[in-house]
Image (cartoon, rainbow, N blue to C red; front, top):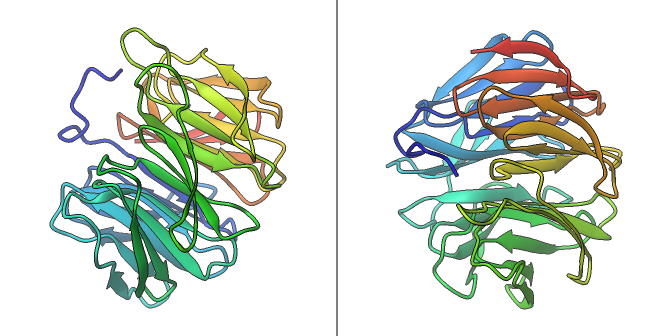
Length: 299
């Protein structure tokens, strides 16, 4: 649904707020990973990254970030922000990866790559296990269950795996052959939400599933794909990034909508659940309140 090539345009693909609420990490097609201070979005640290940073995930309790890359000679990596030590994540497809997430304890890191592999690392970056996603299609996102060592990947289908690599469920999310882009378990682990790409004929869908993989609700109001979505710490609000910032309740009722002049790609809540940061196709970083009202824009 984008009219421009995402591989050549300078886009801020991803953002993630630190668990302590002090810092925000931003990355994209801008040859650097940047860390900003929370309130004023002033640069704090910057690290060179060759070409595209596709996803950033802060460790749940340590001051380290896990970063995926693609279209780059630089491997995905774990970065310690206290020591600036960088550890490359080996075994990932040369085509790179887009999905990355820490498990609920922070003991394991999952990477889902562009050749349909899921790789499990320990927090030091040692590869523990690698398995296939049923086929070699690019995986766009991965999300661990908030209380169990099982994970969801999204690509052409929704797939649920245990940590040993056993496929527990494979779900065709809609009749049309449309790629999924994002997934987020609810904090309770009782349900999850997915967002897809849509195409010229079919609108992008936001879909609400129970833990058994049964579809409960589908919404098609967005004019663009759902690049990213995330729950706040209380689990009572979901933020989605597409043609607008939208905030939903836990039953996927729309609460607030914040207009954007360009498409939003990254989205993350702070630890208090009263601020949201987004990154965009036109390199804008926007700080919003919990009613989807703009507080600050940095470009």
